[in-house]
Image (cartoon, rainbow, N blue to C red; front, side, top):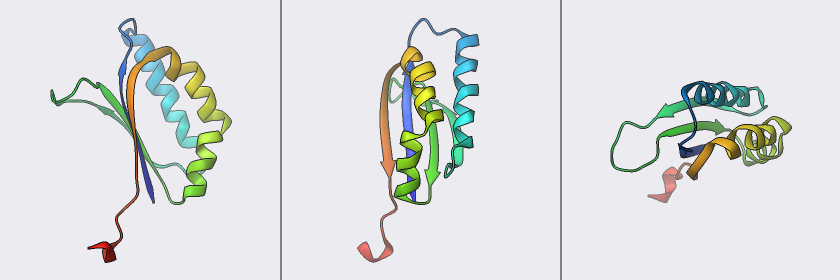
Length: 101
């Protein structure tokens, strides 16, 4: 299992209509095979400057790699992410095995 998360801030010129368009387009990522538990997030803590987040899970590394190269994901990056996002942090988690402890 891989938990893929991106935490980000929008560029200053992004208005409410464009923000809604961005998140509507993000939901389309759920049509990519292997994407499960997709969520959109709004930051509520003042502990950092990031404003929003997207998260999803993949059962296998192969599904995650296929997602990264999928045309829908690449279109989202080019048409939504690059024009709108000012700064981001990407985190990809994998569960720690029980026998690790």
